[in-house]
Length: 79
Image 1 (cartoon, one colour):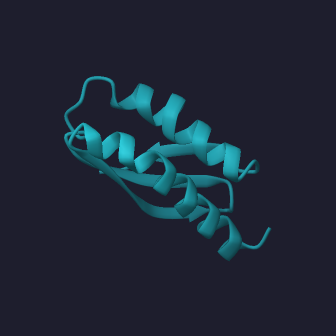
Image 2 (cartoon, rainbow, N blue to C red):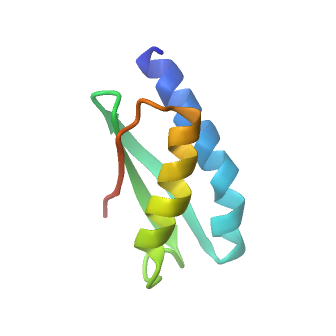
């Protein structure tokens, strides 16, 4: 998979999870992808101060991204 295909598939994964985040007043934005294996995202809105945002990041966002792009090893949130 090329870097562009990885980016497109990560965006598709984020589009899949975005409605769930938006229903709670939050959102997510792709910041970048390093070495085709590390995805950096930024949580926005209500997600920023949410006490379970790390659980959402790991069990929701990371799982969904890995389903679309298996070679992604980790998803991290940046400020």
